[in-house]
Length: 470
Image 1 (cartoon, rainbow, N blue to C red):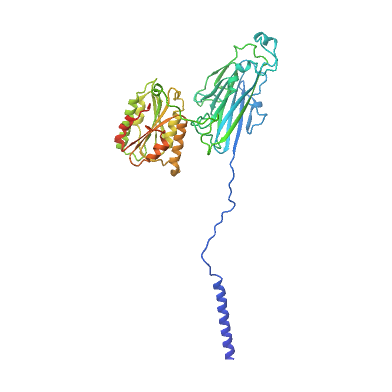
Image 2: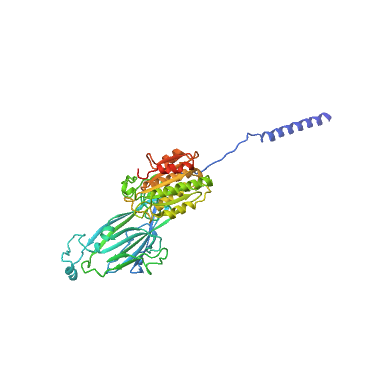
């Protein structure tokens, strides 16, 4: 009996050992982890250009030539008026929208017909050469219709701050190409060389007049609608019967081309280049923008030396109404336009004196603001008044965010300025600047465009040696 009990105890113990080994064996494993990335994809983006149009005829809405944002079809006509009379006028706001991706954009117009069509008795009296032959370009209407295109803010009213893109007779304007945005020109309110931003809407205003069109812009931001005041006047009182029954027709097309990896695109297909070296006479009428670093790396003593040197440089330029004009931007965490281009050295030096240092280094913003001023209403024709930019900095760009790409952003802005024809000079102050970056990526190429100085006490000497006409 005792032997049997012991045997059962031993067997039970063995069974427990086996069970334990199974349990322990089932939980032994090396540490591990698995992460899975599923459905990885590379997909092509899209450049999808859409156009809408809001149209008016004689200060009333024209529903026949108005449509919502869409892809254009052959039935979408910017003008379709078959019974106009002298003094009639029309206005349109064309809105341009590129989905998702930044893009260059061009507008191409082709005059396909300027025809006499029929020769009525009154028309023959004023136009004895009127002929009903098959010649589609023997009419007078194209020369009597006046057109105006401008950069609009969306209200279809021509205002004083809005820039004219093209103007003239239908026979010339409707047979031309307009740059909306390419590597050299921007006619939609951006800086020269900037593309259309994906997802943003841009506006072009168009007005026409059967007669003499006179620009009569409404005060800035006071435009209501063409029903109230279009900003243009139309007078057809001087017209005779020569254009009776004449017909003008034209094709208008819009195109968009990707901006990414295509920085040098131009609507006319030419390679953009820096404006040729101007004559000495033209150089002595230059438009000069100072771009001054006022970041926190500049202490009060150095800022005082910067101000003194910059003001002496302004005096040396010898600003006059018919000579050199100058303006000034500055940059820290953000940039600011401190003085517009003008011949007033007193107010310019006062703006320089008002600078206060502090913050980070946003060279891109300082360059962009100067480029904008050199392309704005205060800029004179570049052929007679070439554009110059003088940058003074003691640091390395670290704004806008992300700071790691801030130098690339500043270089891109400098490239755009140079493509637009601006000659850039750079003075690098101190040992913290990246000399190769400022000389190779920011300044214009060639000797005499980059000046390194050890500290701000040497700045005045550097500016004395800077020759904008060399």
